[in-house]
Amino acid sequence: MKCITTKHWMDRYLLSSLSSSTLQIFKSGASTILPTCSSSYRYYSKTSTSSTCSSSTASNGSSSTVNEERNRLLESSLQLLKQLKEKQSSSSTMILNKKDELLTDTFGRKHTYLRISLTERCNLRCQYCMPEEGVQLQPSENIMTDQEIIKLSRLFVSAGVTKIRFTGGEPLVRKNIESMIEEIGKIKGLETIAMTTNAIALGRKLERLQKAGLNLLNISLDTLDANKFTIITRRLGWDKVKESIDKALSLGFNPVKINCVVMKNINHYEINDFVEMTRDKPIEVRFIEYMPFDGNRWSDQKFVSYKEMLDIIKTKYETIEKIPEDHPNNTSKTYQVPGFRGKVGFITSMSEHFCGSCNRLRLTADGNLKVCLFGNDEVSLRDLMRHGVSDDDLLLIINQAVLKKKASLGGNNNMHEISQNKNRPMILIGG
Image (cartoon, rainbow, N blue to C red; front, side):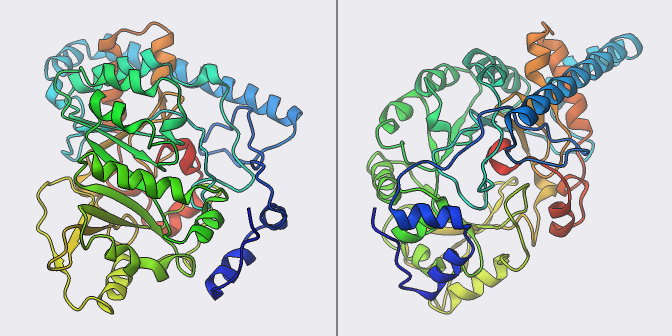
């Protein structure tokens, strides 16, 4: 690997933002993977204060703390379940008899979309997703098994979920992903199987995944410059991503969605280059506002709002038309340059949130249900399953979690409040 040049002044800006250890890896031409913790990460509750790697002694203490916290949460969930059965037995029966209401919250939002993180591991180290020092990963026995994922998929579909998206980490680093998706693809009532991937390993797996039932694909790509890709992701691989996009198009995925997190002075100069990708191909570029998560060094100085992005596009394309929404739960504000085959969209989570129409629930790789991306309340469905709780009882717990979902932004008022609250890093939530 050649030394990265600073042919543009924005590349100099990027290089200056990296630590000396990362720069040394680039300058020396080393291909060594940056160290990542393999011990259990700290459980993210309101009292958690750290997400970084520590010494083995500290890690062991952290692991003990994780287990204690999980045991406490399990006992709390079991106690809640007991109360539901004893004091509200008739209500509980009524809830289970109305499965179409199990995933409806107090604001009338019906949740039909489940995002499942398959792993905490990733083969990239994107700046906005993973802290540079790495994250403390769960031991493998704490990650949901294939059968647990299949079981929960069936359970959520029985309660009204029609779309499941697999995320990570990087979902394609999980072993046996093709056979697991083949099983989930057989679930009656499931209409859409989607995946968000960095596409490094997609090329050699995509055909089997498509045959298994994968019918919607989002590929994360934040730059069209190979050198800058290495800086943003702290890894090589731009050529593999490009090849995977071409393969997805050749296999008939329509559209192929490209997720691009926009950061000021890092890649906002490339917005119009991404728009140009949509000229002749069925590609939908989705520009995502930079969101604060633990360890990603979020700053409003890096934030670019959707209206600012739109203004940048209009400097090159005089006309860009808004496409009418075709689904009440769309997260994207979609536009199209007249005559272009593809489209562009904006995920405006920070400047104009869409919480009022949210229909999403999330399962972390270790089996915790998160009803809101920005909230830190979680309940471990994995632990309840391993404790032997019945499917009906799991549904009651899921229903109670959904009923506690806040109106917007996990109970926060704006992006600045979100940035001050403890939450998992994005890689441990599931992108």
